[in-house]
Amino acid sequence: MLTLLPLLGGLGVVCVGAGQARVARAMSLGFSFGALALAVGVWHRFDPSVGGMQFGERCDWVPSLNIEYRLGLDGLGLLMVMLTALVVPLALLTSGADRERGHLYFALILWLQAGLFGTFTALNFFHWFLFWELSLVPAFFLVKLWGGPDRSRAAMQFFLYTMVGSIALLLSFLAIHLATGSFDFQTLAGMARTGELNTALVGQLGWKALSGRMLVLILFAGAFLGFAVKIPIVPFHTWLPATYAEAPSPVTMLLTGVMSKMGVYGFLRILLPIFPEPARWALKGLLVLTVLSIVLTAFAAFAQKDLKRMLAYSSINHLGYCVLGMLAVFSGRDVMDGSLQRAAALDGVLLQMLNHGLTAAALFLFVALIERRSGGLRGMNDFGGLRKPAPVLAGLMGIALFSSLGLPGLNGFVGEFLIFKGAFPLVPWAAALSTLGLLVTAIFLLTLLQRVFNGPLNERWKAFPDLTVRERWLVGPPVVLMLVLGVYPQLVLGMVDQTVTTMVQQFGF
Image (cartoon, rainbow, N blue to C red; front, side, top):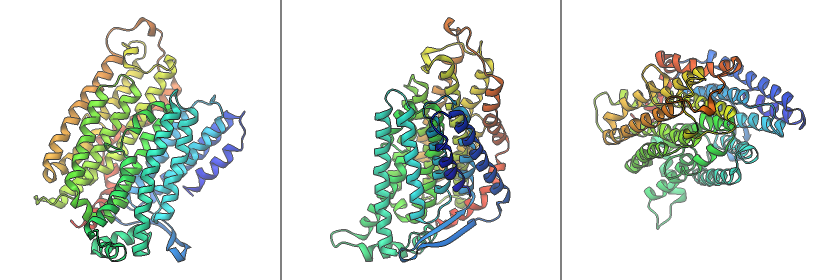
């Protein structure tokens, strides 16, 4: 129902017609709030004491190829479904009803939501890959048709990067299927834990000139590339700043709030459970890329003057902490309470995925409101002193910015704290170097706050309008969630603790 509701809703919306954008928007909001209600129902029925999959559905699809229609949710999938269900209505509400070809625009957003729901619930690679690719197509057209002046180049870059990653991922899994006859994630993860997977890969696909270890590493690299492009990790990140800057702000909310989590989800659900040994073999190199992703993108964000490009680089920086926490779990370092440290790191990763999705989407929402009032301007040097004419906008956006830089008492702090709590004893050198990213993040976000909202008021913006009542209701829910999760993170951690414990055990610790 979660997957079909927005899928069928998009078909209904696109049939409304080009001249009925308001009707199309109202319909898309209805379907998205219906999906939110279903997601809340799943959250209510979810049993946090169970570490495995719940709400399972399973039936044969193509039995001769071991392709199944298989769905399920654990704590990780539950958080991603809830994040999708929250961010999509927020993006739709941010979108105006006066868009050209509005019926197609709103239908594409619903189809994107369907692809996201399918990605976060499917447990068979063939089934999962259909939704993985389905989410790419609407995102491409949303950037291509409604983006900024350089939208064609940005959309093509986005499409090519993600398509190359998807092809590499597909080839790796076709090789795995050829060797094992299975597309099932849980079956393959079980084979990986016992060593059967590597044995099957070497036995069925081994070449005389290629060692078994090298073969497994090549397949791991293909799968890694598919997910690394999506997060993204340096040096596979260059598509992201242009795409986020050129996309309409509501679409950027979806790209950073939810789609970027597809890569992190793929690491946790697919890559690391199925390739645990190659992850250990390549750990130092992967940690180097992670530290570069955290530190270099923080400096790149500091160098930006365009608000959307600054927040785009900031998004890469924040997701780098998630990768750091995941990789720390595979450290072979012998530490006291190693399982607890690994669980803390993974708890932080799951919480950071949710927190970053909420905070980043809210920040791009605030940028959209500023653009709407300024005629499309979004450069830091274009403004100054906006706190005086728009104190509510300044105050609420300030909360989101402080959440992003990890102020204690807000949601951004808890996830990062848990990641570093686990990472420092397990990979101390990588964690220590990554703290430089925290410092630079605080500097550029405070610079943004100072230049846009403080200082002398630019006379041009003397009549800059503050948030309307409707806009306050729009930005209120994510800001409230930032405060609630900052002081009561157990609301989320209590739902995923058992899932995290199960993951640590499955990874062999």
